[in-house]
Amino acid sequence: MLIDMTHTITPEISVCPGDPAPVLSRGSTITKDGCRTTQLTLCSHTGTHMDAPAHLLRDGRSLDEMPMSQFSGRATALDVTSAGPVITAEFLRAHHDDIYCADYVLFSTGWESRWGTEGYLEDTFPVPDEEAAHYLASCGLKGVGTDALSVDRLGGPPTVHTILMKADAVILENLCLEKVRGRRDFLFFALPMKFQNADGAPIRAFAELREKFEGERRRR
Image 1: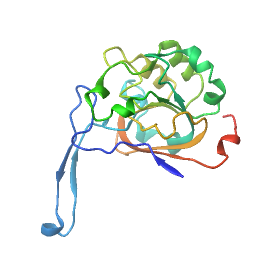
Image 2: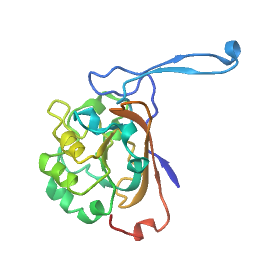
Image 3: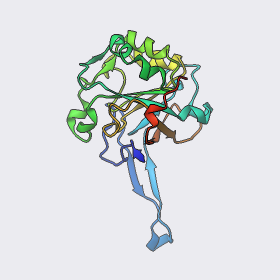
Image 4: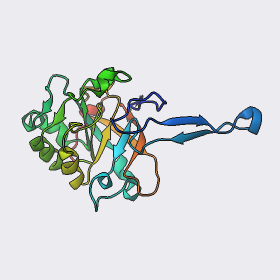
């Protein structure tokens, strides 16, 4: 079974404060031109998207420089709705077996339920602290994701981003995780738009759930 984990890009989509709203305007029409096209104008970090190390690091890789293997793997979706505003290293160590078996760790904060409202922009969603970020970086992950706007506080320095990017991990934001919350092991795909020097890009993210898959544990 495949589960879509991506918000649809619309002109009304929630965007990070300071980013422009996307514009979807009519290009050609079937009546006039014999085909339908849409002209898109959007930030590379619009909607459900992926941050490349090049987003913040001078020598970081861009998404178009990364191998395709970076964009898929096994994932665990940790329920952090009750973790409070800070996800601690202690909390993560309590889930060590699930994290160590994963390529991607995804934080289900509950913010998905606020999508499309002013409440989604409230900067109180759970984020890892610095120690937790170092723990994640030590696990050799391909990426870390969240159903909120960011893995860092919006009003502070991008500490978590920087720590993870230095470990060559990608960061995924604005995911749809409600249907996989609490799943310990599933196949995850996050396919970014490919363009030159991509510091980030909208992605089509989805999960593949297989019967008895979680019983077939393996370590990276």
